[in-house]
Length: 140
Image 1 (cartoon, rainbow, N blue to C red):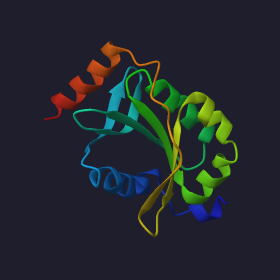
Image 2: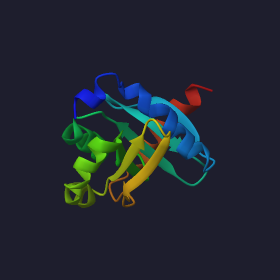
Image 3: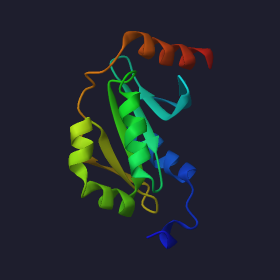
Image 4: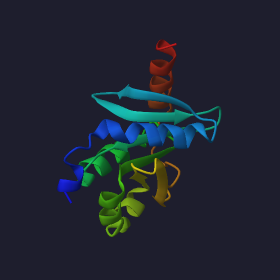
């Protein structure tokens, strides 16, 4: 499994995820600060703020980070290369219990598949969401 990833970087996951959300008319921002962390990708429109944590292998850390992002986002996902995401999907109950969605990214086909749907965040705090939007506005 790791041999498959020897030439893959986390950054390689960005283009398919960006395309996935742009097709649904979301705006995209990368590396948005949230306290001491940075959300890898934010997709947003007038109605929804979506946080995505990209990881190649460390799904446990990704799940912790995506769960934390629920304090500022409406929903939160982890995105991983396809085969790693399938392995994680077998532990889907941990993602479902946390309310975090899971994307499988097919790098060669430039496709994204939603393996686990996220639950709307019941942890969201207005001041953290405002901080995310403020960070976005500062860039424009």
